[in-house]
Length: 327
Ligand code: ADP
Ligand code: MG
Image (cartoon, rainbow, N blue to C red; front, top):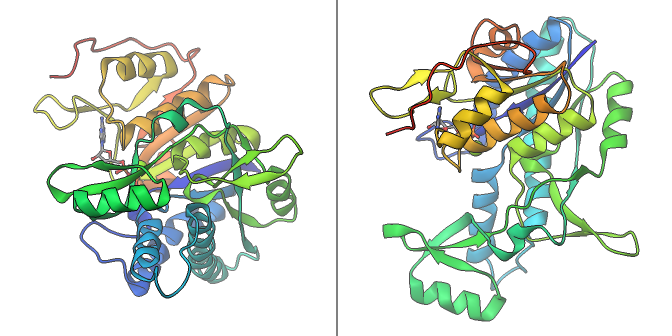
């Protein structure tokens, strides 16, 4: 079967403007899973991964508000908890969609650890804002009491920042392979995976960090030797000159061209940047692969090359169209 890693963005679970109640999240996941079921019905072998930013954010709020009542849990526990909850929603929805189509496959979620390096430069420079906004004074109190790093985030106040180290290995890869071999559709590595570092005695230890889900998806797809990485998000294409009057979509692009545009600064660091980097990493590791960045509601058309941004290996000769820097 044709093995595909699908990375679901935030809009697969919570739509813009929603509060994110359990019912809202399940309803969104239901719609998402119709798209995914179409891929399964078309004969693709899926490994599904997903973001968890808003869900972890909510758990951190609960941590803070309940601090005097129940002990706060570490950030990597929050990742584990959201992997379970989101995986559960996908099992519910995708299980039903497959049943409706007469497809007998189980859907299994694996609580997945992702290894990061203790010497990753990200530890020196925490950049990823998470959780509540607080006034400076309160933020400074928390920093003094806990050793956390908080930074000003404009008019809304201060926010905790954590490192976002590069994923280097999917610790639970073998378990994922076993589940795939058993015929299951696997949900794994949610939220980029639970960040762990390997101690000299071989033990893995959870760490206070978050791993970018797109970069983790690229690593997962590489380790599982997938033929394609399908990154589904809330825009139909990667754009050049995004947000300007000269914006234009990329339809087919080679890795080298995409690197060139990346260096020109077309892709925002907290959003499209990691998707583009993930696509580049995955496709450049082996000449037969493809990455697609596309809108969630066109999953199958995107996977079959009819829409989205198709990132191709360099041996697919193409012409560089623009070289001007974004305004
Ligand atoms: P996800 O939850 O799917 O990871 P993100 O919000 O992180 O979604 O990334 C998708 C967003 O990236 C789009 O909604 C868009 O606003 C933004 N974006 C930034 N730069 C670009 C670009 N060059 N082309 C397209 N979208 C871009
Ligand atoms: Mg994102």
